[in-house]
Amino acid sequence: MSKQMTLEVTEVEPLTALVTRFRFEHPEKAPLPIFSGGAHVVVEMPDGEMLRCNAYSLISDPNDASGYEIAVRREDAGRGGSRYMHSEVTPGSKMRISVPTNLFALDPRARKHVLIAGGIGITPFLSHLHQLDLLQQPFELHYAARSRDEAAGLKLLPKSARIHAHISEEGNRMDLGEILTGQPIGTHVYVCGPEGLISAVLDAAARHGWPKGALHFEAFASPPPGKPFTVTLAKSGRMIEVSASQSLLEALEAAEVEIDWSCRGGACGRCETKVAACDGQIEHNDHWLSRDERAEQKKIMPCMSRFTGDALVLDL
Amino acid sequence: MPNTSFSPSIESRPTYAGLVPQGAAPSIMIADAEGAEAILDLVDRDAAVLDQAHLIYIPKGAQFGSKLAELGAKGYHEEASLDAAMTLINRLLGAAHMGTQLYLAGSEGMMGRISALALSLGLPLDAIQMEHRGSIGRPMQCVHCKGVTQDVTTDPFTCSHCGLTLFVRDHFSRRLGVFQAVCVDAETPGVIPETQEITA
Ligand code: FES
Image (cartoon, rainbow over all chains, first blue to last red; front, side, top):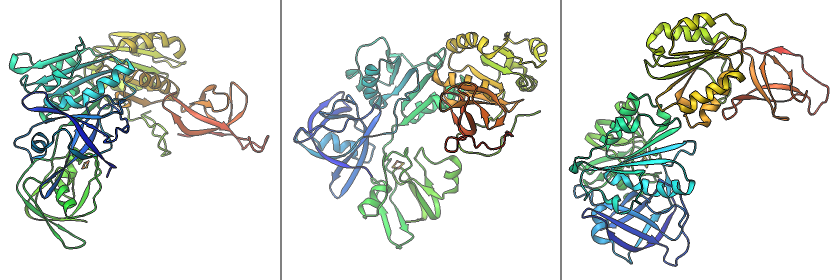
């Protein structure tokens, strides 16, 4: 669990019909901890009875301690976190925010960085760009979006010959084969966006003989909603209900069950929890467990994953 | 003689998984001495690896040169020493693209030096294939004077730069591509354990 700070919202700017930028500052204008490109914060959203926490990539300059900025896409089919941000949060709102954590840093050993973003997956790269500029390292950024409405990053990206926008509605699709061919030795690839884009990049890279160590990705995931379910805690026998719009982690927190976390997006491994018994199917939505571990159903990542079936007993 | 398997040691001691053919992808192959046999085995498994391969060989007295030359790699270069080969290796690696395969076979001294170079160019470790063949002589860096003594086969040994008597350690620097050696009689000058041949 990371340290929390209470910050004040100072700017709310719609970037497109779907995406809004938020700026947070310390209420007394105290400097905030600086961070590194690709870092995220976890934002607490007290929505009625429920405390929802979503992770958002920071898009502001990592060395600027005067404030943190995030960009949030409204997900109407989501659990409500992004809707809350869009409808309830205004300048002057106070919100609890974690200190930044980074699971998607630039590899300092790379000699060139190829950044590939899909849709709202542009956000971590916005802070990377500040850092690359400071380090004066070679890079290229490829930004794919379905439409200009989805391409909120266009407003925040500097004009540069190294930044390429691919708007598929305008017939300008991204050609991964071309991007991955002829890159000089020491190039690393970073991809952030929907699942489909990530696997397309990883597959194309494997076909072109890229080593795994040069590939970095961050799935853009907040926990998906689903059917309500019940979990049992092995040690106390307590039963905990997880509602349709709640993650298992949030339900455990609401019941004051102590559980460690960091990314809340199924990537860091911190929330890994042992399953004592499972009669049904775990819906693994994380990127942490291996294929074998998923099949065994002996572990679950409560920040992302859900359950359908008769009984799920956690070793808690 | 197959790929040498080294006895289990600390994490930093490199082990070498052996060469696995990656098809007709562009590649740089570097072998010294008995490392030639690992290249011959590799080609035996899939001759397509030669289609776009630059093969560099440093014989160090071994007799595999003509066999390797006959393989018909896209480019074959025989060099008298690793030092002499470095200009070419630097040029080939520097001009390589991501997706170029790197195959190293032979001594720990050569593989350590080339993998350190490749890492410094930003290539991740999993992009470097290595197979150990031949002498188990190690490249040892004296932690006191920083000089590197190549092909060390006894423990302790004498630093070829500063003359101290040094212990052979399994601590390996990936950045430098060498093992670390420390003074054996620093606390008890002149008390030196009996010299032994090192083993794999
Ligand atoms: S909190 Fe990171 S994987 Fe669950």
